[in-house]
Image (cartoon, rainbow, N blue to C red):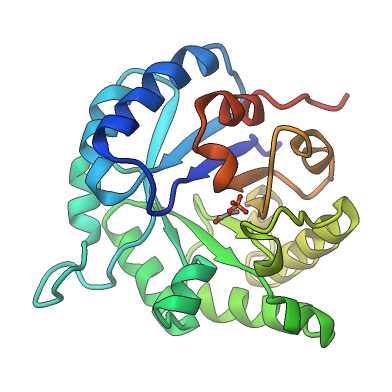
Length: 249
Ligand code: PEP
């Protein structure tokens, strides 16, 4: 049985003040949420404030990125040691915006996962195809490459994968439940080749224009185990509705 996993990715949004305001409204709305892992990834500057305000709640903290070295001359970068110390349990690695705007490769993603794991951070590894790749019939080829290269020599424990079709991110164009299930099922097949036993336990999240209106249908797909939510996670009320999605019987 895979516990549902709902994560916010705030990207480059919210000051410290706005972060505190969000949590004051959000915490009471999800206090009673059971059998769901709730994770929030604020920008680096808000991690400290978020860490103190979520203490004792059912919410965990994620960073949106990490460097693959533990320390050194990497101006502007943040190491996994720093993230663990500040109270992060997770880190998002390989988000398509990092791949696209900051030229992160599968090899870099793999190195980041290795270092993050070494310092006790669990990882949410993002994979997903562009519209051009989908239209060229290359979706499975891209997903296979990202999964196989990204997870090379990585143990399976506490791994979370996020399938985020790039054409659905921030566009309001969600994948249909059929498209999501097909991709998730394909990813699970790739995982079972890497981790024959553990693949059934690995959570695969869907990301791409998730809202309170489409979460129930997505979560009803057999291989969709949660969501990585951008835009709709910025408002406490809408993200709480996603966390409190309706379970299908
Ligand atoms: C994301 O960036 O991870 C994301 C899924 O964004 P949105 O929900 O806004 O599409």
